[in-house]
Length: 384
Image (cartoon, rainbow, N blue to C red; front, side):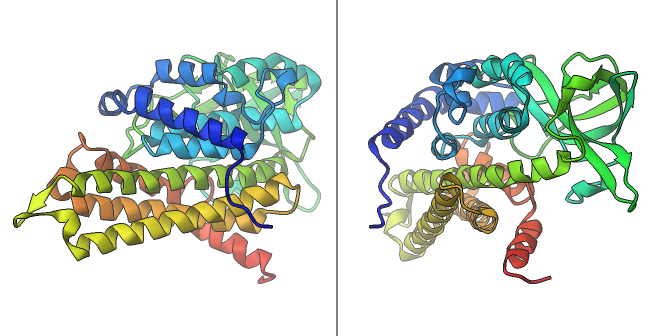
């Protein structure tokens, strides 16, 4: 029997995060967004709730849940604000999960308890200034010299990389040139404060203004050989598997933004009058909101389907790409329509839909562009 209802545990989690988002995040996040300030207090409260440890085993300080639980939390947070949601998503899927999936017992013991509790944040450095979607064109290098990795290069657009509580960044780097001319790419852990590891000033961004994003540079940054994460030469492959999970999470975040647009519009059209009537009585407005709800519903089903296969241990690359593509399109379309419904007020930062519109575009770019998702879907269909 097919049943799309959440069980009691998932339902309780969803409700607790919804309450937190409405009670704690919504009243203050606009101010953080305007000041482009990182919301440390909110992150600490999310840590106390156990959100950063949702898919991490209890032995490492986590909640012992699963990735779908994280997705539910992300959806509810993004209904109110995407900066807070992406801080959680990146902190878990990019900061903690590579260590959880591929780390040695010593690495897990050293880093995961603080990451799972939200006392510290981790980041992952994959994208480079000249690379973009072509992550295989990595130029950052790591040479093994006297039992230590010496790293040189740079990374761009790295979330959670420069906060006061950032504990580490895992970076992909070329560790050798193979006989067939391809690059051997490995993943290496760099603790914050490593000499030669510099964090540039924060970017001036169109959206996600209350999240932390920086360019990183490495000038003979040196760490022990034991800081290799996973298998040497498998760094890129390891991260591709992390990206599949992350795309489901970004889809959930996108659904939250799309749903937030519906929520705000329903409130607004019940109050706003034009030509002597509440604008929610006009069919043109009703059809816009109906289409917004349609897109949100379909996108939610897409990420539920991907998460279901993921939790069963079945291949889910195609479903993750479908979910990410469907949901990011829904977020972008809904935010545009919501801004139109709000009219001039939609262009004002004091109204959430203005933030939603600015935040939505990056969802079609980050963790694999929409073009990359289409490429992955086509490959999974056997098209070469």
